[in-house]
Image (cartoon, rainbow, N blue to C red; front, top):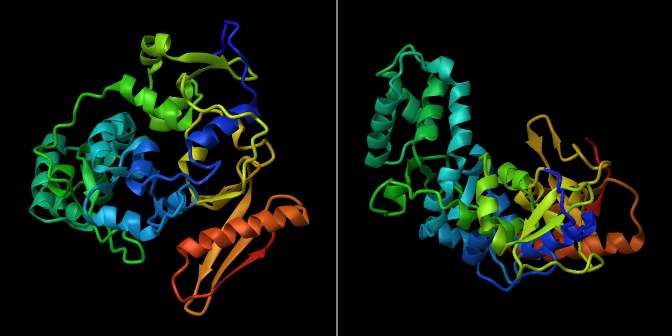
Length: 373
């Protein structure tokens, strides 16, 4: 929405630095893994390793075993939430944030509705709940059990419906560091030992404030992109007296918390290596604060997303990891030409990360290559 006021203008670079500060990407933060997962409102977890790499890029002293232990103790869990994608959330945020994604799951369910002709969705939800609460089940086991009741339905549509209708958590060992297993599902209330599956009414105002703390300054449309929920303008307007208003270089109105960091645009932004689908690149309608026009659409091919790195606060290339018994090799693939000093900075940060993430007793090396996609 274009601003009609004389709100102060924040440059694209200033926006980038502000969000990097909140995303703990300007300098490693001294906070626990659990506190970071909460502050960041969850970590994208379409695959099992990205949450670990996301925290390695952000936290001082992080070890992957810390997040793995939180999963085993059920203080964090993997579940479909924002944008109808899998995230790692704290147990508290599973109940708070999952309802935000229901609109996206409802849209997803409509896509599969043709395969559910004649299926009573309320009964499907009840049957699925009883099934997975008896013991965690794989998606294959869920659809096979449901096919007994609706043999003419599309099998995939049945399991998708169960996932869209119920708060289904992926139980461990799925997602544990270097010990992951196949997807098995049960309800959040069973896995997290809550009294019931009843989710609290969405406190949009509270979530808006948390979103701005992690991703601001931001527009209404930015937050809608982050969570997949529409019609958030009313909440922002209700909070306006508590917020600061800015505008970007295109005149779009942005909101922010008065006390939130907004560093000088010239604040150094060291290289950071991020996993595929990192939320810092997915949580704004206008991604220009991190992604230049030249770099746009270069981070995936078909349905495959790539791990990326930021240089001076901007998306600047890809990286890939090859892990073998004898050696771990990280290849950095810049989008453009880089100087010797920049390559040295990239190599130093890569070695820091591999020192945290590479398997003990396995040597590692860092090299440079060209983008081959």
